Image (cartoon, rainbow over all chains, first blue to last red; front, side, top):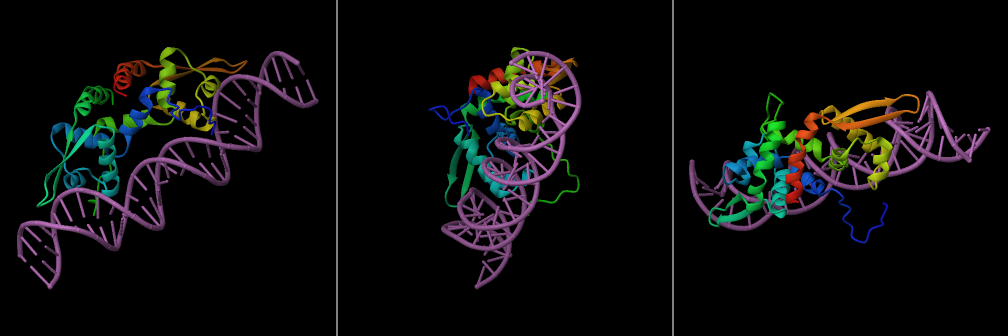
Length: 103
Length: 103
DNA sequence: TTTTGTGGTCATGTTTTTCTGACTTATTGT
DNA sequence: ACAATAAGTCAGAAAAACATGACCACAAAA
């Protein structure tokens, strides 16, 4: 495993980790939908063809963890949760735009 | 029930595939080095810590396939091959720059 | 002649990611 | 009472990505 560095972050390339985190299944899709407005778990499940709970759940959790989405409990009574693009998330919009232009 | 679909082409998001193709192991790293000048198989293997032939080989092949790198045989006698950033590849530089700024 | 270097492929493992189906807590609808 | 919706979790299986070591052709150096 070539363990040679004290800090275990062999990240010579800054884009590497971010890129990996963004590329996960459904993530670009979720991001794109979140740009248009708040998104919800069950709606995403229906909107994203072939998606499944587990993967979507992990995708949302990770997008939240890296600070691109904010999770908000809107109501407890009929449980209602929303995910919104954070400021950091918004700062990624131009990157996506460029990417889409090249795809 | 994860909605069964007749047509199996679920590419609603244009950034999706490109993002996935860029995020593979060593790929951002290779890209970054290719920005600085032509890169070669064996040099990359040494430069990229913990890299292995197989994965690197696949990475180069895929970067070539999606048209980001151009492969050139420089010499046959002592076999010498170079990979250079293509025009499409160069057009991705600003995207990477932005990504690095946010990472 | 054996080793070194370039640029890989191939078969086989291991690891990570993704998928499936069952289950949960709580509320509203029939 | 029973089913449905919301927003998930959990265990296990399948698929995709990644790593390892052997091997190949060819050339040059020791």
